[in-house]
Amino acid sequence: MSVVLCNVASATGNDNNNNNDNISEESNPVTIYRCRAPIASLDCMEEFSGRSTSLGSNPAIPVRNNATTTPGLRYKNLGKSGMRVSNVGLGTWPIFSPGVSEDQAEAILRLAVDSGINLFDLSEAHSGTRAEIELGKIIQKAGWKRTSYIITTKIYWSTKSEERGLSRKHIIESVQASLQRLQLSYIDIVLVHKADSMCPMEEIVRAMNYVISQGWSMYWGTARWSPVEIMEAYTNCRQFNCVTPIVEQAEYHMFCREKAELYLPEMYNKIGVGFMAWGPLSMCLGDTQNGERLWLPKGSFKTKSQSYSWTEDEVNKEERLEETRRMYDKARDISNLAEKLGCNAMQLSIAWSLKHEPVQCLLLGATSPEQLHQSLQALQLLPRLSTGVMLEIERILDNKPVRPPPISTLALR
Image (cartoon, rainbow, N blue to C red):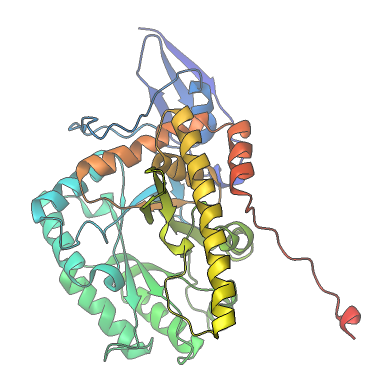
């Protein structure tokens, strides 16, 4: 067996810290790519573009039982910290939903670990405290080394509960309760889920700094914060010599792009806040009049009742119907394009999100090992998303966000 060594240089700035080797053992001779990503960078994957791999949409693809890293999975530094996370993380909100058994949840988590995923995201807001309890049990049963996985959990406040707000008391008590449920000595990243306008930002950042100084958490970040709120938190951290946040968790998919593409890259370049995305799987199946079934984002349609006058209601009804028609047309075109690429619309959505460099970790969810396996196959689609394919997707979506032009204060006078 011959071994060929070659150097592959990355053209992107965010891959400067990826220093490990990429090894392909598919055929002889074996080519070892000296890359700056530990598994496979997108630049290295371009070398494999000649190998056409049909992903398909067959749900009966067998699940691998051996502990081999998924092709295309790589590791990145989260924000400008030293923590390295897999570019695909596992969101636990569907895994610990009422319809999934304990054995099924354990099988999903074991498949994730065997596939190379090292980040598990928890949210009390979605799955309650059950997720932390069940995940803690599975970790203890599996006996995974604490250094081999990363846990992120959220401090969630709600006006519907008695324990509300982001006071120092609530933050410390919430972190201690999560540690007890998880049966862990520390949490890797504590995310503050939504900002609290009723609590001073100084109190929030000082409380998070105390949590880290006590060793209960290694880092902290935000979820669903606006760029203005993130910058305010960073400024307070600098002013009071506190640990700054390293990541923002936000929605990002083909139909939700503005925040992720316009403002979060700026946050990363200025203050080192990374981007953890969720959303490609927050889709629902819709039925068209001719019986076709398409993937559509749940947030695309307004479901909340609003009070209008009779004429306003009629006008808005027509606007919503027209918006629905446009959305169906775009979804149909995306599905047709995915079929040409040999995958389904969900896999194309996952690959499209990962293709954007600001996404350092994309959270996926699953209710079965087969579903997770199918989602992970989207990683093999990355080298086939050429410039031409990406331009075709842009043409179909026609929603590329554009920063509004600056307004001169002199012109307003």
